[in-house]
Image 1 (tube, rainbow, N blue to C red):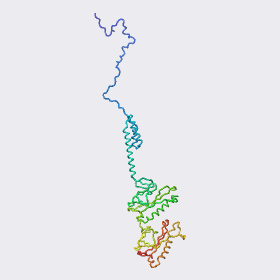
Image 2: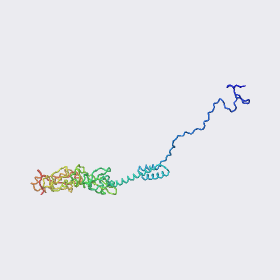
Image 3: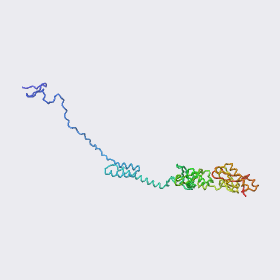
Image 4: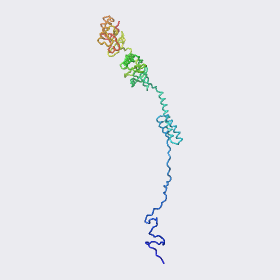
Length: 382
């Protein structure tokens, strides 16, 4: 006999000694709980990509190599050489970079050395630079460094209270000349005022001959000092120069511009003849008395102080001088011109010192005659 299969709702067959199906054994899982996920095994390694390179290993740059190139570029030659040698040694031992930098520092040092040699050679070929007492910088020198008789151009203030100029041969167009130099005596170094008076008087005396120069109206006197300051042990030296301000080229020494026929009134001597006389010009030219002329000097004299009529401590005034000069020239005319017929054809005149002349100790009177009509044709002196 056949037994039909159990239905799905009926429990399956079990042996008699089997536990009841509705009572789970201790520790058994709840059939209604969800099943745990299946074990997936250990994590997989990252996928391998063919051809991917490993990371590079960088070599450090030697610091002394950097120091070498920097100091070499700025011209610190001893440091650059020391840093470069140290860098080359260390880089070779440690496998560091920087040999090129070290060599560059050495190369820069060599360039600096060559530049110094060239500069030294060029400097030695130029005129030497000196101090203010005799400097020659680019051809320009203080006038105190030039010699007497030297001619110059480019006369300017040197910025320290003195003057400077560029020396030139006197045969080339120039603008001045050093005319005198003298050491100041200790007595005049006691004050600035005494030094100034001494300097002005000395330079005027040394340049008086240039008052007869044909460029006399275009010459300007200057002076400068060299040496230590006053009150020091060493003396001061005065340099007198004359600057030419004219437009015509000056191509000779100043002494060559002097016209020996030009004279100041107090340089005129008895018997000399003059054709033109300008009261505004301190100089006049003499001419031969055999040529037609207007004036002739018949006497000269210097005002004396023995009679006490003149106070030489100051200018006595034009009226007092005029009276003294007229009386002196009339007295001398009486002695020179004894022939009345000649004297009637002549007019007497005289030249006396101005206030400026008087203060320069020029106290001379020049007595002259002129023709009453026309010009004199010969000397009127006996």
